Image 1 (cartoon, rainbow, N blue to C red):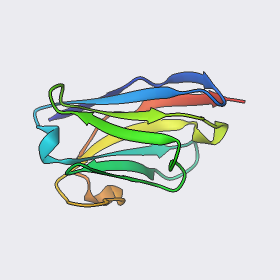
Image 2: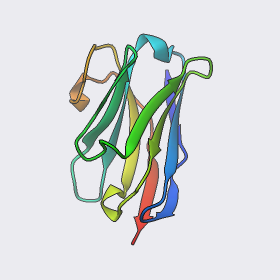
Image 3: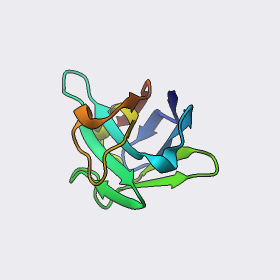
Image 4: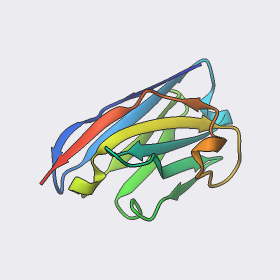
Length: 121
């Protein structure tokens, strides 16, 4: 099983970026897929999850971030708009067999390697 996160980069505050997570060795439609992020010196935190067709967001991303999936490509996306310097972090995708709004990283079975998002002011 491998999750490959990509799409990170440098963007100015107020800009947009879409990060992707492609899976091999598992079928995303059978899993909840979440995004987490970890800023320097901080703990990894929940960002969003898409699970059985429903999407859930941390308060930090509500109204700005959209999680979606393309089952044909076995890929999950996180569209991030109105980015702020506080969104700067390494973004990780992960897959869980749990249902619902799975916020705890301990509930995730598989992790990608992360992609760096840097938002300049």
